[in-house]
Image 1 (tube, rainbow, N blue to C red):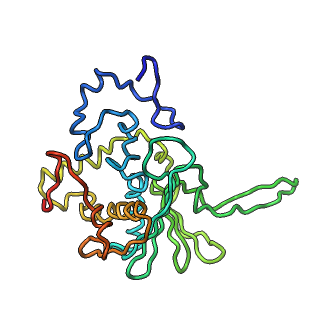
Image 2 (image 1 turned 30 degrees about the horizontal axis):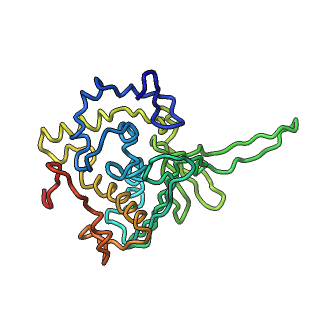
Image 3 (image 1 turned 90 degrees about the vertical axis):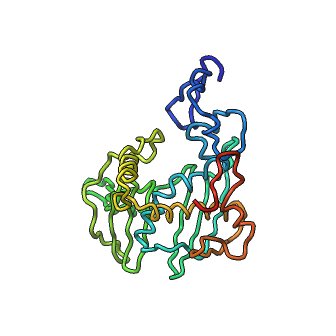
Length: 284
């Protein structure tokens, strides 16, 4: 970085990163940071947060934000098993950069009982979802007023059912609507505005890590706020979606053995070429 140069993680961010000087990087165990990935010189565009956009270290926003929404979606659908089919397509559009992962991606999952799950990754400009069309009214003085029973969902989950539909945003606020007329049903109540899904600085996840450390110390699996196997099932979905995306075709899955059916190329992508001491054995 040149003296006096300021660096942002992306073009829309208002937060500037600290200068990655020799003094700063001397506190970074870069070899450990690379882990099993191929060894290469330091690159700030592959470092803080932007590591998500390189296949060596990350899995794009489908695997970044995805598990949060996949977890809620699986819970709503009542699906503990893996899907039997997955197909994902998309691409990287608009900006010129070294980003490898897509900023626009649609992933479709089909379960054995016929339920469908669709996950949309929209890194560019997009409309919110779930909001009802406003109820347009003309007031006595000729003015137009618009009222809506729902609030926009920028990041969240929408469930379309046989009697109505439900939306829940990433802050946990949820609303239900029934029938063709979208009659309002039960809701979570007053909207909690404290959570900002677009804040990329993050809060550190202190509560989650504290709970994990507590469970490790106690040795009791029941002390985990989120059971490790439940989290695993939600994390698998974006991973197999990315395999489909990178191969460019629909894949059939064997949930019992956690493998793809009759597809050697896809199964090879369930692991990686490990570097040096950073190797995960076949059995842990």
